[in-house]
Length: 625
Image (cartoon, rainbow, N blue to C red; front, side, top):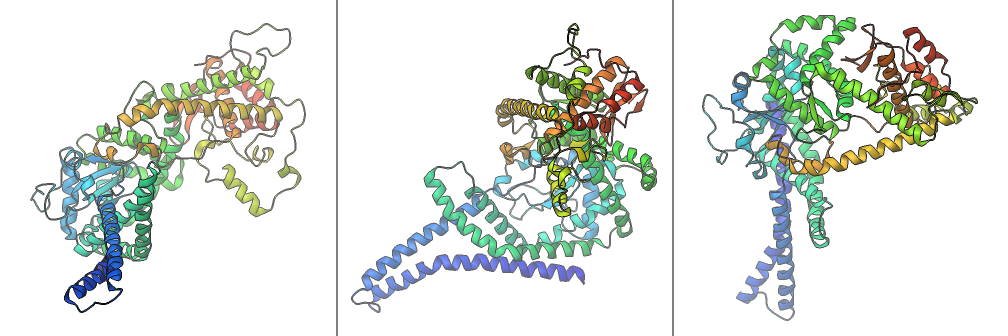
């Protein structure tokens, strides 16, 4: 009953969208119809007399103008390329078991099988229509079309419309078991049934064409005349799109309802368990990207096994969190990635796509953009990042004229030291009071400030220090300004200069990467040629870091370098917290508050006590990049 009700709702809403299209066509043809009546009446003598000749000429001119405008809008809507999600295509030869599972699932649901399968570096799955002519040429290269009912779909130029493409989140394949993946994909695959209805398919094509036309008309890189013509066409498309908005939303809701009701008959009990794994996979994927992958991307390295890393991250979570103890027992079952012939190659392709989407990296590897294996991550990423940050910190201190000697009259050391940084940040006067210290803000303003400065619990993990600890714990939050500037004058000055230096470096890297990225847009697969590299990254993981965050990261990097060079500490990788400092094989988890005490209060005592306990010699020079 629910299936029929949802499908009926979707079809009725699709007809409402098509009626809007018909009304727009009728409005465009109305002046032409009036002109035809006037011309026929004049030729037969039924409409004749003084003034009718002028009326016929004016109406005919208006009709021609309206018809030309209508033809232009129709061509724009028909020829504009609808948006297509960037994905990694999966050919049937590289995943025959996966195609077989999806085909069997479609047969059980009594719906058409998807035409192809693609992967996306995200924890989501959906059906995507790629039947537009602009999407047609790359299709033979992107994926072999799935056979339905044992018969292959013959040609890309078939008369019957192709089924949509099934897009699967790549973390699902590595974390979920085969049965869980089938249960999660059941309601998605069931959506191909309503999608095959002619009215729903036509309504979707019309709405997607309007959306693409609006995007084309809004493009800034146009000449004045073209921009004016496209502006008129875009204005008409926006009016039609606003009129279709409610009906299109209700149509998609009806399609989802019908698909969900149809999928109730397939693995319903297992789907409840699988939905828990969806949330867990999303949490692990987000943590892996923000705390592990992002530092590597900033160093010009992209982890080539992100999907395998999410399994390691969630396994580590199961060891730490008592609520997740039961999840390790699932690892004995067959993972869904076994449905792929070469999971390593697919993982590498999705990892590169994730780097492009979330960070904006190039489409191909090079000296400054190379893959890194998890075993090489501590040396290739963590060690290099700490030493690069420490070198930048000392360059900034050199630019500020800070002496390399700790005491006047002492000899110049052979290299940069941690003592130089600590002595410069040590407050000679009490920290300058902030407005928040003198007049505490109301609760609403304090909440808004926390959101703006990124100091809430939901803050992206840019606030996590390189030792794997949260840098903004309760011991240091109250000693900083609301705008993220450290409280002491020296810290504020150093943070401002560091921010400017890092901004110049990032701008130079972006300018160098712009030229090769545009020339190699198609190297990652056919899908990559269908979206604009200039819009990268499409989904930035975090807002720009504040000066306080940058200073904390750089000072922490300097401390870690001193610990590695003088106390035998090692760089490490924590799957949940990212780069970490290993002391005697154990992760150091108490460095963050001590660094904050130095940069925000100008008090080096907690950090010096920590250094002495570990045997770190702050007066010794460290090796930089």
